[in-house]
Amino acid sequence: MPGNNVASFAGIGGIGSQIWPLTGPEIVSRKVLKELRVRSNGPGFYNLAVHLLALVLTGCLVYVTTGNLWLQIPAMLAYGTVIVLSFAPLHECSHSTAFKTRWMNHALGYFIATMTFRPFLYFKYRHAAHHTYTQHEDRDPDIVPFPHSLGDYFSQIIGAGFWPKLFGTLWRGSTGRFNEDEKSFLPESVRTQVSNEIRLQCLFYLVLLVVSVYFQSAVLLVYWVIPRVMGEPVLRSIRMAEHTGTEESPNLLANTRTTLANPLLRQLYWNMPYHAEHHLASSVPFHALGKLHEHVEPHLECVTKGYFTVHREILREVWTSKHDGSASRD
Image 1 (cartoon, one colour):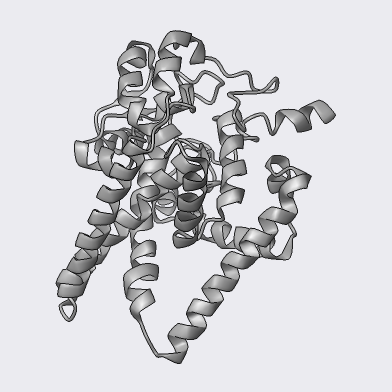
Image 2 (cartoon, helix red, strand yellow):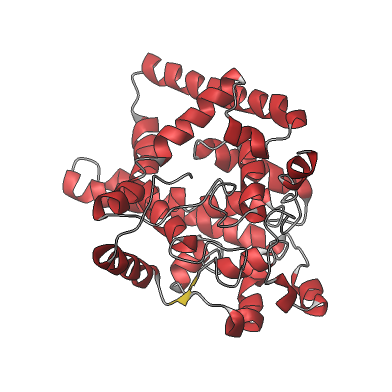
Protein backbone atom coordinates (compact mmCIF):
# COMPACT_ATOMS: atom_id res chain seq x y z
CA MET A 1 0.00 0.00 0.00
CA PRO A 2 1.31 3.51 -0.77
CA GLY A 3 0.60 4.66 2.76
CA ASN A 4 2.78 1.90 4.16
CA ASN A 5 5.62 2.91 1.88
CA VAL A 6 5.47 6.51 3.07
CA ALA A 7 5.31 5.37 6.68
CA SER A 8 8.41 3.26 6.28
CA PHE A 9 10.49 6.41 5.70
CA ALA A 10 8.87 8.41 8.50
CA GLY A 11 11.81 7.75 10.78
CA ILE A 12 13.97 10.38 9.06
CA GLY A 13 13.38 13.08 11.60
CA GLY A 14 10.24 11.38 12.90
CA ILE A 15 9.38 9.19 15.87
CA GLY A 16 6.94 6.66 14.53
CA SER A 17 4.34 5.67 11.98
CA GLN A 18 0.70 4.73 11.66
CA ILE A 19 1.76 1.09 11.48
CA TRP A 20 3.74 1.23 14.73
CA PRO A 21 2.53 4.30 16.71
CA LEU A 22 5.28 4.86 19.24
CA THR A 23 4.37 6.14 22.68
CA GLY A 24 6.47 7.68 25.42
CA PRO A 25 7.89 10.91 23.93
CA GLU A 26 4.86 12.77 25.28
CA ILE A 27 6.35 12.64 28.79
CA VAL A 28 9.02 15.15 27.69
CA SER A 29 7.58 18.66 27.84
CA ARG A 30 8.06 21.00 24.91
CA LYS A 31 9.95 23.40 27.15
CA VAL A 32 12.44 20.77 28.25
CA LEU A 33 12.82 19.43 24.72
CA LYS A 34 13.48 22.91 23.35
CA GLU A 35 16.18 23.50 25.96
CA LEU A 36 17.91 20.17 25.48
CA ARG A 37 17.84 19.87 21.71
CA VAL A 38 20.16 22.89 21.19
CA ARG A 39 23.16 21.72 19.15
CA SER A 40 26.75 22.86 19.54
CA ASN A 41 30.13 22.08 18.00
CA GLY A 42 32.06 22.26 21.28
CA PRO A 43 30.97 18.98 22.91
CA GLY A 44 31.48 17.12 19.65
CA PHE A 45 35.05 18.42 19.29
CA TYR A 46 35.79 17.55 22.91
CA ASN A 47 34.44 14.00 22.66
CA LEU A 48 36.19 13.46 19.35
CA ALA A 49 39.49 14.65 20.85
CA VAL A 50 39.08 12.25 23.79
CA HIS A 51 38.26 9.40 21.41
CA LEU A 52 41.28 10.14 19.21
CA LEU A 53 43.52 10.32 22.28
CA ALA A 54 42.22 6.92 23.40
CA LEU A 55 42.97 5.56 19.90
CA VAL A 56 46.53 6.92 20.02
CA LEU A 57 47.22 5.59 23.51
CA THR A 58 45.86 2.10 22.85
CA GLY A 59 47.52 2.07 19.43
CA CYS A 60 50.84 2.84 21.13
CA LEU A 61 50.21 -0.10 23.45
CA VAL A 62 49.90 -2.34 20.41
CA TYR A 63 53.17 -0.97 19.07
CA VAL A 64 55.24 -1.29 22.27
CA THR A 65 53.99 -4.84 22.88
CA THR A 66 55.08 -6.02 19.43
CA GLY A 67 56.96 -9.29 19.78
CA ASN A 68 55.18 -10.32 22.97
CA LEU A 69 51.99 -12.05 21.93
CA TRP A 70 50.68 -12.40 25.49
CA LEU A 71 50.79 -8.63 25.91
CA GLN A 72 49.93 -7.62 22.36
CA ILE A 73 46.64 -9.53 22.21
CA PRO A 74 45.05 -7.67 25.16
CA ALA A 75 46.54 -4.43 23.81
CA MET A 76 44.88 -5.08 20.44
CA LEU A 77 41.62 -5.89 22.19
CA ALA A 78 41.74 -2.56 24.04
CA TYR A 79 42.61 -0.75 20.80
CA GLY A 80 39.89 -2.61 18.91
CA THR A 81 37.36 -1.72 21.59
CA VAL A 82 38.08 1.98 21.12
CA ILE A 83 37.73 1.50 17.35
CA VAL A 84 34.33 -0.19 17.55
CA LEU A 85 33.06 2.32 20.12
CA SER A 86 33.42 4.91 17.36
CA PHE A 87 30.07 3.49 16.29
CA ALA A 88 28.63 6.00 18.79
CA PRO A 89 29.84 9.16 16.99
CA LEU A 90 28.90 7.52 13.67
CA HIS A 91 25.41 7.00 15.07
CA GLU A 92 25.33 10.58 16.36
CA CYS A 93 26.40 11.90 12.96
CA SER A 94 23.56 9.98 11.32
CA HIS A 95 21.19 12.07 13.47
CA SER A 96 23.22 15.23 12.69
CA THR A 97 23.63 15.82 16.42
CA ALA A 98 27.38 15.26 16.88
CA PHE A 99 27.98 18.83 15.69
CA LYS A 100 25.87 21.88 15.00
CA THR A 101 27.58 22.33 11.62
CA ARG A 102 25.97 20.02 9.10
CA TRP A 103 29.02 19.23 6.95
CA MET A 104 31.02 18.22 10.04
CA ASN A 105 28.44 15.52 10.80
CA HIS A 106 28.70 14.24 7.24
CA ALA A 107 32.51 14.34 7.14
CA LEU A 108 32.98 12.49 10.42
CA GLY A 109 30.14 10.11 9.61
CA TYR A 110 31.64 9.06 6.28
CA PHE A 111 35.11 8.71 7.82
CA ILE A 112 34.01 6.45 10.68
CA ALA A 113 31.68 4.48 8.42
CA THR A 114 34.61 3.71 6.13
CA MET A 115 36.85 2.83 9.07
CA THR A 116 34.27 0.40 10.46
CA PHE A 117 33.12 -1.06 7.09
CA ARG A 118 29.65 0.54 7.30
CA PRO A 119 28.23 2.62 4.41
CA PHE A 120 27.16 5.91 6.01
CA LEU A 121 24.13 6.82 3.89
CA TYR A 122 22.87 3.23 3.99
CA PHE A 123 23.25 3.22 7.76
CA LYS A 124 21.41 6.55 8.07
CA TYR A 125 18.28 5.16 6.39
CA ARG A 126 18.48 1.80 8.09
CA HIS A 127 18.84 3.45 11.48
CA ALA A 128 15.89 5.72 10.74
CA ALA A 129 13.77 2.62 10.20
CA HIS A 130 15.00 1.30 13.55
CA HIS A 131 13.72 4.46 15.24
CA THR A 132 10.44 4.33 13.35
CA TYR A 133 9.71 0.68 14.14
CA THR A 134 11.65 0.11 17.37
CA GLN A 135 11.15 -3.52 18.46
CA HIS A 136 8.68 -4.32 15.67
CA GLU A 137 9.30 -7.99 14.94
CA ASP A 138 9.28 -7.61 11.15
CA ARG A 139 9.96 -3.95 10.40
CA ASP A 140 12.78 -3.06 12.80
CA PRO A 141 15.95 -3.94 10.80
CA ASP A 142 18.10 -3.78 13.94
CA ILE A 143 16.00 -5.92 16.24
CA VAL A 144 18.07 -8.45 18.20
CA PRO A 145 15.80 -11.37 19.08
CA PHE A 146 16.17 -12.83 22.53
CA PRO A 147 18.67 -15.73 22.35
CA HIS A 148 16.92 -19.10 22.65
CA SER A 149 20.02 -20.95 23.90
CA LEU A 150 23.52 -20.37 25.22
CA GLY A 151 24.86 -21.22 21.77
CA ASP A 152 22.61 -18.59 20.21
CA TYR A 153 23.68 -16.06 22.84
CA PHE A 154 27.41 -16.53 22.19
CA SER A 155 26.76 -16.65 18.43
CA GLN A 156 25.24 -13.18 18.66
CA ILE A 157 28.06 -11.90 20.86
CA ILE A 158 30.82 -12.96 18.45
CA GLY A 159 28.88 -11.55 15.49
CA ALA A 160 28.23 -14.82 13.66
CA GLY A 161 25.22 -13.25 12.00
CA PHE A 162 26.59 -9.71 11.89
CA TRP A 163 29.65 -10.19 9.67
CA PRO A 164 27.89 -12.05 6.80
CA LYS A 165 25.19 -9.40 6.75
CA LEU A 166 27.72 -6.57 6.82
CA PHE A 167 29.69 -7.93 3.87
CA GLY A 168 26.43 -8.88 2.19
CA THR A 169 25.43 -5.23 2.43
CA LEU A 170 28.66 -4.18 0.71
CA TRP A 171 28.20 -6.79 -2.03
CA ARG A 172 24.54 -6.02 -2.72
CA GLY A 173 25.16 -2.29 -2.53
CA SER A 174 28.09 -2.41 -4.94
CA THR A 175 26.03 -4.42 -7.43
CA GLY A 176 22.88 -2.36 -6.86
CA ARG A 177 20.86 -5.48 -5.99
CA PHE A 178 19.25 -4.60 -2.69
CA ASN A 179 17.07 -7.22 -1.06
CA GLU A 180 13.43 -6.67 -0.09
CA ASP A 181 14.25 -5.75 3.51
CA GLU A 182 16.66 -3.07 2.31
CA LYS A 183 14.16 -1.73 -0.20
CA SER A 184 11.68 -1.27 2.65
CA PHE A 185 13.88 1.42 4.24
CA LEU A 186 15.82 2.71 1.23
CA PRO A 187 13.65 5.03 -0.90
CA GLU A 188 14.09 4.31 -4.59
CA SER A 189 15.28 7.89 -5.08
CA VAL A 190 18.44 7.30 -2.99
CA ARG A 191 19.38 3.75 -3.99
CA THR A 192 21.71 4.85 -6.77
CA GLN A 193 23.43 7.29 -4.43
CA VAL A 194 23.78 4.60 -1.77
CA SER A 195 25.22 2.16 -4.35
CA ASN A 196 27.72 4.74 -5.58
CA GLU A 197 28.86 5.41 -2.02
CA ILE A 198 29.38 1.69 -1.39
CA ARG A 199 31.23 1.27 -4.69
CA LEU A 200 33.64 4.08 -3.79
CA GLN A 201 34.09 2.57 -0.35
CA CYS A 202 34.89 -0.87 -1.77
CA LEU A 203 37.25 0.69 -4.32
CA PHE A 204 39.07 2.39 -1.45
CA TYR A 205 39.44 -0.95 0.36
CA LEU A 206 40.72 -2.56 -2.84
CA VAL A 207 43.35 0.15 -3.34
CA LEU A 208 44.54 -0.27 0.24
CA LEU A 209 44.76 -4.03 -0.25
CA VAL A 210 46.78 -3.69 -3.44
CA VAL A 211 49.16 -1.18 -1.83
CA SER A 212 49.61 -3.42 1.23
CA VAL A 213 50.36 -6.46 -0.91
CA TYR A 214 52.73 -4.48 -3.13
CA PHE A 215 54.77 -3.22 -0.17
CA GLN A 216 54.30 -6.51 1.72
CA SER A 217 53.07 -4.50 4.70
CA ALA A 218 50.97 -5.82 7.58
CA VAL A 219 50.37 -2.36 9.06
CA LEU A 220 46.71 -2.21 8.06
CA LEU A 221 46.11 -5.70 9.40
CA VAL A 222 47.75 -5.00 12.76
CA TYR A 223 46.47 -1.46 13.30
CA TRP A 224 43.07 -1.65 11.67
CA VAL A 225 41.50 -4.87 10.40
CA ILE A 226 42.41 -7.35 13.17
CA PRO A 227 41.64 -4.97 16.08
CA ARG A 228 38.40 -3.97 14.36
CA VAL A 229 37.32 -7.62 14.26
CA MET A 230 38.58 -8.33 17.79
CA GLY A 231 36.60 -5.44 19.24
CA GLU A 232 33.27 -6.28 17.61
CA PRO A 233 32.07 -8.62 20.42
CA VAL A 234 32.26 -5.65 22.79
CA LEU A 235 29.96 -3.65 20.53
CA ARG A 236 27.67 -6.66 20.01
CA SER A 237 27.35 -6.93 23.80
CA ILE A 238 26.42 -3.27 24.11
CA ARG A 239 23.99 -3.36 21.19
CA MET A 240 22.31 -6.47 22.61
CA ALA A 241 21.78 -4.67 25.93
CA GLU A 242 19.94 -1.78 24.27
CA HIS A 243 16.73 -3.67 23.45
CA THR A 244 17.09 -7.42 23.97
CA GLY A 245 14.70 -8.69 26.62
CA THR A 246 12.57 -5.54 26.58
CA GLU A 247 8.97 -5.33 25.38
CA GLU A 248 8.36 -5.89 21.69
CA SER A 249 5.80 -3.10 21.69
CA PRO A 250 5.62 0.53 20.49
CA ASN A 251 6.07 1.76 24.08
CA LEU A 252 9.48 3.47 24.14
CA LEU A 253 9.40 3.55 27.93
CA ALA A 254 9.44 -0.25 27.94
CA ASN A 255 11.03 -1.37 24.64
CA THR A 256 14.43 0.29 25.14
CA ARG A 257 16.91 -0.13 27.99
CA THR A 258 19.05 2.52 29.64
CA THR A 259 22.25 1.15 31.17
CA LEU A 260 23.95 3.14 33.92
CA ALA A 261 27.46 2.53 32.63
CA ASN A 262 30.71 3.64 34.24
CA PRO A 263 31.96 7.16 33.33
CA LEU A 264 34.76 5.90 31.05
CA LEU A 265 32.47 3.80 28.89
CA ARG A 266 29.85 6.53 28.89
CA GLN A 267 32.50 8.94 27.62
CA LEU A 268 33.85 6.66 24.89
CA TYR A 269 30.35 5.64 23.87
CA TRP A 270 29.18 9.24 23.67
CA ASN A 271 26.39 8.88 26.27
CA MET A 272 24.63 6.19 24.23
CA PRO A 273 24.12 4.04 27.35
CA TYR A 274 21.28 6.55 27.92
CA HIS A 275 19.54 4.68 25.16
CA ALA A 276 15.89 4.95 26.19
CA GLU A 277 16.39 8.70 26.47
CA HIS A 278 17.80 8.79 22.97
CA HIS A 279 14.81 6.92 21.55
CA LEU A 280 12.37 9.18 23.39
CA ALA A 281 13.95 12.27 21.83
CA SER A 282 16.45 11.45 19.08
CA SER A 283 16.84 15.16 18.26
CA VAL A 284 18.53 15.74 21.63
CA PRO A 285 22.33 15.75 21.18
CA PHE A 286 24.44 13.18 23.01
CA HIS A 287 25.83 15.71 25.47
CA ALA A 288 22.34 16.54 26.81
CA LEU A 289 21.15 12.95 27.32
CA GLY A 290 22.28 12.94 30.95
CA LYS A 291 20.02 15.91 31.67
CA LEU A 292 17.18 14.26 29.78
CA HIS A 293 17.67 11.18 31.95
CA GLU A 294 16.99 13.28 35.04
CA HIS A 295 13.61 14.26 33.61
CA VAL A 296 12.45 10.85 32.38
CA GLU A 297 14.11 8.32 34.72
CA PRO A 298 11.02 7.87 36.96
CA HIS A 299 9.01 6.81 33.90
CA LEU A 300 11.49 4.32 32.41
CA GLU A 301 10.70 0.63 32.83
CA CYS A 302 14.14 -0.72 31.84
CA VAL A 303 17.04 0.86 33.71
CA THR A 304 19.94 -1.41 34.64
CA LYS A 305 23.13 -0.78 36.58
CA GLY A 306 25.90 -1.81 34.22
CA TYR A 307 26.26 -4.04 31.16
CA PHE A 308 27.42 -7.04 33.19
CA THR A 309 24.13 -6.86 35.08
CA VAL A 310 22.17 -6.79 31.81
CA HIS A 311 23.95 -9.85 30.46
CA ARG A 312 23.68 -11.69 33.74
CA GLU A 313 19.91 -11.19 33.56
CA ILE A 314 19.78 -12.31 29.93
CA LEU A 315 21.86 -15.41 30.63
CA ARG A 316 19.77 -16.26 33.67
CA GLU A 317 16.61 -16.11 31.57
CA VAL A 318 18.23 -18.12 28.76
CA TRP A 319 19.25 -20.72 31.29
CA THR A 320 15.84 -21.01 32.92
CA SER A 321 13.48 -20.53 30.01
CA LYS A 322 13.07 -21.52 26.38
CA HIS A 323 12.68 -18.67 23.90
CA ASP A 324 12.14 -18.62 20.17
CA GLY A 325 14.96 -16.68 18.49
CA SER A 326 17.07 -16.22 15.41
CA ALA A 327 20.32 -14.61 14.43
CA SER A 328 20.72 -10.86 14.93
CA ARG A 329 19.50 -8.68 12.09
CA ASP A 330 22.10 -6.04 12.73
